Length: 405
Ligand code: MLT
Image (cartoon, rainbow, N blue to C red; front, side, top):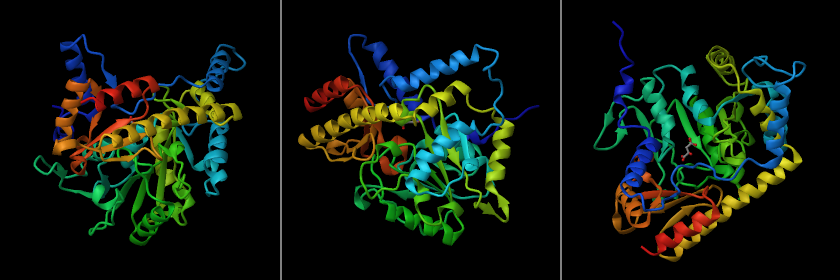
């Protein structure tokens, strides 16, 4: 008789954004006359930029001609044209040492950040900033690495939590117990805050000194405006021996529905003489047949002169929303954070409401959907996230509603 992976049974409830979607859909069904404004999940709303769309069309046409048709890609790492564009623009231009054969093109930072744990032993202890993007923890729970869940504390017994709250200015402190694997995401989802390059360097030094590995999620890199923030962890000295970086095309190019990302595994990264690059290549070649050619061609156009200019306008559009959310909420007395180097605004819930109480209040009284901070971890309790990825008009309307509450 077959058995199941019991670790799945340990996961509390459903995935955060599915829970929210179900709640919102139940409310919408019960109140068909209400028009909801969704500033919950970090999903983009601006259409694919023209230069990228043109590349898509061109690639689709290529697939229709025998001479330019493509079947399986040469290997699962991605076409060299895209990996070279990534290398030049995301790493060389920043003075970061990365090589073209260290870049693995994939179908999303969500899948890569969930899958990367497969190449590590079951006995590794992970550390996460708290609040945190839920995928890092849940994927390790599925692999049996997190121990048991305590419903009271909302913590896993075998996870090291690095609280990031108002009290420490959302900057994690080094834990008492040394973790094996540390997940960092900067600019941060969900708090919208970030750390300086100097502070990131301290984490790289810590990891190298303690034989720990950093999994660095740079999905929101395009939103960095502060000059002292690193655009890639490989700007830090020594990162090649302790860090894997995961990057997304979702938030910088509107690819949430298209699906494209890349992960860098430096060849200097080893464990007992075994190359992590080799392990990840083996994993990808076995389980993944690469991202669609047409999507990789569209990804290449992200780095063209026109593509860059058009995407800079999109980022500016979203960041105008972020500024508006930040300033409007502050003007009516909310404590607000983030929104400068990231498209998320993190706010303290008013009148000591719990995160879910505020979620319900905003949904029912303002018909605005946000994300409860506690859904991202215990230190998110009492906080709430709004995204700047809505349309400008909806953002303005949502703020009028919130201000009127
Ligand atoms: C979020 O809202 O946190 C993100 O959209 C989730 C994701 O990127 O998968």
